[in-house]
Image 1 (tube, rainbow, N blue to C red):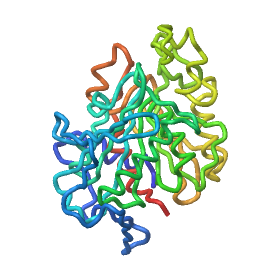
Image 2 (spheres, rainbow, N blue to C red):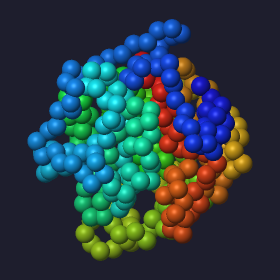
Image 3 (cartoon, rainbow, N blue to C red):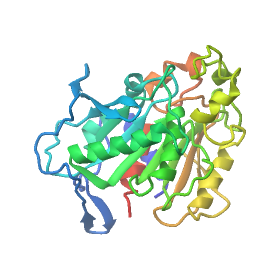
Length: 352
């Protein structure tokens, strides 16, 4: 499926009050061939009301804040179950990870994933990182990666999920984590969508090719498009409690940003294309005035795509909340809608 085509449709749709959707599809079903659908069920199917783990509370937005015990202490996530959920029909799950020092509460406003899930019928989970500033340890052996596994297992035990349609997205440090998740949980996660932070993880050996749609701006001053820690990231407080900045404590960056920070985004994309058995040379196609799709020719179900925004900052494309932060994060393009494009890509890429 060409993202260029999807973008053209969704950019037009964003200009109206209507929303795009797939009226012929049942929530939680995966289209495998014309006229056929296959749905799987998680252990949480069969109860009309979601099973709520001990420690669950209603958050101010009307969703749930779920707290669980982990080997490293109590951890939590926000959980949005759309009002149309019946507990009997397996629904897709999107796990949405916040950025460095951002936190889940604020990130939910940036991505708008929950509002789209309400309309398009998928469940959204927004986990909270650790420490201060709040962050993710994105290494393959980290406690945060084990926490991700606990989140996935708990949600699939307590909600009616289609295990073939579990997806992950994330912003910045959360995008780094989504890259690591593709390495470790390829048997559970169907596709990923890193925004402003696709990474090439050292030692990454996924059990299957993982489809990826990524987004990055060429003027990102936090995670630079051509490689290197940006000057804005260098000013941020390090997570080691030293009171110093990331620029002053480069070693602190090893946990939050795996792999070489000097590696350019196009080279990172090519590394994933190699893992997925794609062609070595990508093609470029314009999808809007300032955004170009870079896509590799890949085996079916293993697509690798990047939406590159010329002059774009460390931003979530199409988000008004992201645009309001332009003085800090740089330009947010409004010519594409990352949240809509991510969902369209996810719909086309269930687990085989």
